[in-house]
Length: 427
Image (tube, rainbow, N blue to C red; front, side, top):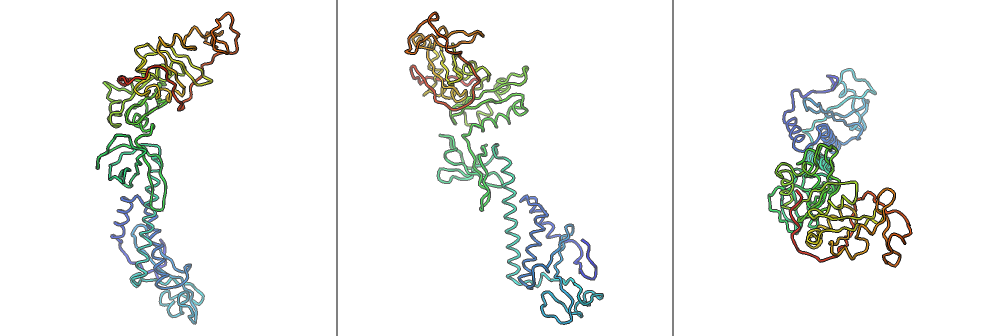
């Protein structure tokens, strides 16, 4: 900062106290030092105007960024008769500052901050504190907005009714009751991983909304535990989850030498068990994704074995036949296994046992006509639902198997409801 020696009275040395305070604020609050310098300059200018009067454009403040010494001055015009002391200075007073000053020249008159009154000093302090608070809020917002749709680790701080405040270090997150796993109780001071749903910038600071039930929480946990998922070798193609109970994930390997399911399970189940532990013991089925929807649906009903699966890609429906003794396993307790499979595949699934399928239209493979490419086409039934046989059948179109798009549809389940065990996770 270059100034004429006769115009500026340098204080000399280094303002160590201010320098250390700036370093501490920059480190703890994450506030840029230049922003702090600007806040100090503005506060000093405000105090000068309140204490000495004058126009805003003729009062200036300069701070040496290296020594942290500051210089306050007012530009005043040299005149013979002073009418406004805030902007004018006599020839005699101007020559005392600069002997070469002449009428009409502008002289920099130093203002002593020690002469500030109590009110001016308090106002300056408030300006600095307000700026620090604003920059701290902006810094926290920018930090956590970059973590939106990602997972963070926090500490359970307190319960607010049925909601929970999670301390993330620089800010508190809000875990609403609707985003908590049913039956899961988090102890005070317990460390948990949560999924950041949204970060809002409010007048009171960032408001961070997090979740423990979101399906993407499972995806992010696998990305942290499985290096093949993190680098893209193994892709998670879909997730269906009933938080606290069971999750199904479909995985696909872009490398033929890498087993997608094996990579996610890990040696002796170490990788999947780490995710299960983080989710409080929630069961996880890991299945292979397939572009053929029939095969994908068969895999999705794991651990049940499937005899046949006939899908309608246009209607997004599937008719699945399972062994008699596997019906309850395929449906799952209260229909959970079939429901999760339907969400994962995007198909409405109708499940029957082999015995039930014998008398159910559309469940027998022989009820379908093979087209020229060997695919199953329309059924051998007339408009009234009567079986007419292949010799009387008039072809009305081909049965298409198209790729499934993941959506959440209802599951149509026929047969006996079972409360039997669903089996261990595929992992």
